[in-house]
Image 1: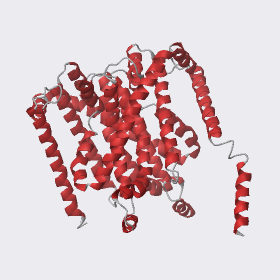
Image 2: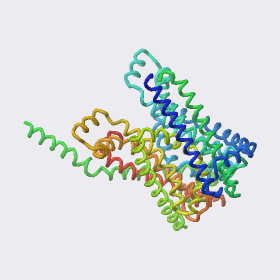
Image 3: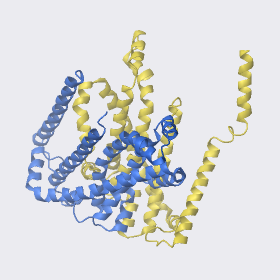
Image 4: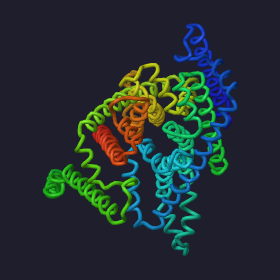
Length: 252
Length: 273
């Protein structure tokens, strides 16, 4: 710990330095070469643009985050539920695993047009898309975690008369938790991105919609401000789940 | 004694190899694959008829295949075009990812400065990035390949770095004591050790590059699987939509299988499939 602390603070310093250098290069390049805003607007210009459009952007971000969060919650429940069901009822594995793999053969975004036709262009279609994308990742990581259990530990618990449920609750789930939470953490960024992609194909609002409209109007300062807002939203969602992960996995 | 036991071992192998080893291999796998496909097709066709699922949700497989056969040109052209975009993006992203991974491994300061920026870059929604790329590079094949590249390079970088860090320092010290150069160290020890990790990322990247190509085509193009998907959505033609989805599935699984086969060939020592 004592050796890790200085090197990690150095890493943070270097990370900040890298970010500052990037912003300076960007700003210098855009201003020095007088790049037109459709090629690359200056960072200061983007921030000013984002501030002047803050009402629009924050409303859009709220819309997108609502879709992403609801879809994410649903996806996690479905993924974990399926993985637990397979573990409790092994015959289900032969049905669910090939079906999940077959559905996943098409890249998730490929389903966007179909889901939009089925569920309309409101918020529901985005939630369904996010839930699909998240559930598969969470399902696979939970299953990997549940399968990682030591056979001998199961036998030991069974020899003391533990039932399936108590083995699941006391042994399998705690063992699976690190992998499960890692899958959930990775899915956060994915959920926001999938919501935005689906919004681009048709929506009443949201960051994807704002970006698409701005592209059509060739307003690239607005495209970049929406990108900044989307990145910030993804990162805070990611950070939130990461924090939760460290709280839950206190023994790590 | 030793010769005898070797001979008997060879004999056993030959005896065991007569049936299940020679014929099987790829043939048994292909047979199983075809059987699986046939069962899926039957289930699809049967359940749509049996439960009376409306064609607006899931048309019968035979209807979809007939529609594809009626206009094979569009699907074929789209398939080839999207395949080209996917492959270029994948190759560029894979090569870049491995090189940057090695650079990050060698230069710690560089990694600590740039890696966080890479992480943040991955939170940029791909369509926003795509809009910019299409603007910069025009509506060309290259633009789609760049989008595929953007989605591909990150996991490869991360896993290359991860793999290189698993190298046993004692082995490095041993090779150094025999006077191995940095290059030899990299080619003989570090990269082979990292290869299984790199291939895990490449398998993931194979699907991601397809996503990049499809989304890239949504910015307006005339050929490609992504274009077929969008056209079908605008005309609410569910049969064509499923046709495009089938084409995407074929491309995605085919490419994944090729990468996985390459993995089995190159990482022959790894127990993991």
